[in-house]
Image (cartoon, rainbow, N blue to C red; front, top):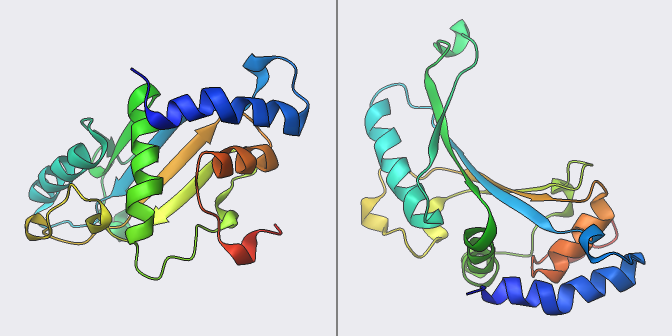
Length: 185
C-alpha cells in the first residue's frame, strides 16, 4: 500500500514536473531518492548513555534503527580518537521515506515555534536540500519526560536531479513550505 504522499507524487507531481521542465520520459522526472537524518553527539562523559537515548529517540522518530557514525581520524583538540562514536544516522528510502516526509511537512514543521517556512539556502548546488532542526521535541513520538538533553539534528533530502531549481520545485510540490522572503532565490 502506497502512502498518501507517494500517491500524490505519482498522480499529480510527476505530470506537473513533466510539464514544467519539458521532460518526455517519466523515468527522467526528478524524484526523491532518500532522506538522511543525522544527529551529532558531543558529550564525552556519559557517551554510552547518550548514544542509547538518542538511538531510541531516532528509532521512534523514523521507524528504523540508526547506525552509529564514527570519527575517521583523531583530533587532539576535541579529545577525539579515530573510531570513537560521534553521532547517529538513519537513511530512509521507499515507503518509510514518504511517510517520514509527510509527517515532517504536515505535523512537525507547523509545530515549530515562530515557523515562517524553511530557508531556500539549504541547497548544496547538487539538487540536495538540508534542513536543520533545533530540537527533537517537536516530533509527536517523543515524550518530553524522556529527554535527557535537547539535541539538534539535520534532515537531508536527496533528489535525483543535479539542479537546485528542479529540486526546489519538486520539494515545493511535495509540500515543503519555503519561507516567503526567500522565494526569489
